Image 1 (cartoon, each protein chain N blue to C red):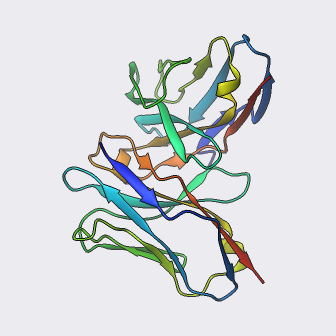
Image 2: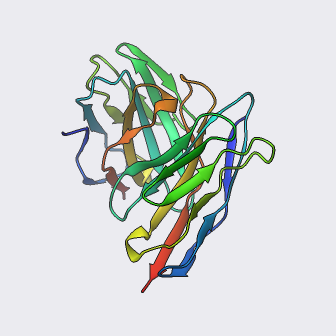
Length: 112
Length: 112
């Protein structure tokens, strides 16, 4: 079946450091890929998405590129801020009618 | 701009009690979902619905029931609560799965 594997956290970075959170997937066909972010005490929010190979999703300084050849969708940000501290979830959907499958989440803590 | 509204936000149940978690959305989304979030385990799909009158089981449906009599509402019923149902429950809605979900703020349930 479909699955998503994320790097385990927690990840602790200093402010202005470069961030990478790895995500790889297993799916049949051509899935759509997503990153969601969950701030403390809140529900998940869509951060970015990509629907086909080589697409790059971007939002709020975060980027991720859909790499079909490596089945990956790694999340990156060039300079993190304390306000980026949250849990980040990678997810996929293999068709318009299939619910999202989520990874286990990666907790990011950014210290000043 | 209510989006997805979940009630209650917190609840403590005794073993064997029953309760209904409420979820309502005002975006006219056809798709609605219930997930549970356990520490370090990501989100697991309980039930979902692709429209009024249609529901389907997800990965972990045992001990839960749902109904979808209107487009707006998607309540989750717990019968005979057990400690294993202690979790944070999230409701979400979307146009389609690969359009991106809007999540509610969650219900934190403790069964003692």
